[in-house]
Image (cartoon, rainbow, N blue to C red):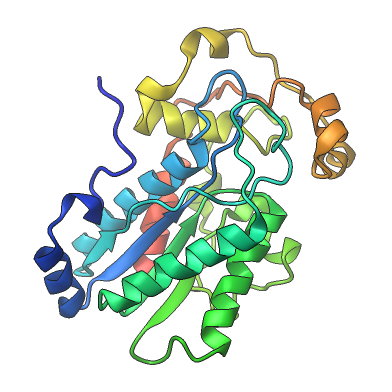
Length: 275
């Protein structure tokens, strides 16, 4: 198989007149958001952007079945990496740079006549998600969006408890509200605490982008078996992160449920219903 490009099925493959026509028909723009950072020895550094891209593609398909047209914007993958920034393969993007670029991307979509811009962000770093929160809040508060156009947050992973970590409830006007469903939990898990390059992310990459996974490296990777206190220390980054996760992954890299990738497919179904 050939690895799927991050630009596949996005408006990067469309002509300008086709994009304009879809926007004028009322198509929403799905904006995948990620980061370039180390994801252990088994997953590519673009894992977060790839998974956000896959979520958008699945959401687009399920939304179309419900009669809602969407287009996928080229992924924004220059998010903020505050924990694994010093690891090999990671990129250091300043918060001000990331915020300015995300603002420009959203406003460009507005200028291309999209009335609804929906962010799908698969990256757990608190600083990164605070940046998205602040960009959307500023756009809302400064009147740069209104009844005729709005940018909202469609997806931040519930399993990372992102709402509470950035002081949100999910009910604020910057969010597309939706609630988790039982199907999101209907999978066999290792029971090992995981938050980065773990069984969930490995399962998604093996399903959607199999040629990007290093299966030889994955085969011999042992779980980290870290605790919630370790997680708090790990989130400090720097020396603490390197001490706890010297190989750049946190959790059990090998999924035990071959159907675990469906966690993301079920998420896409819920998101399609929400929009």
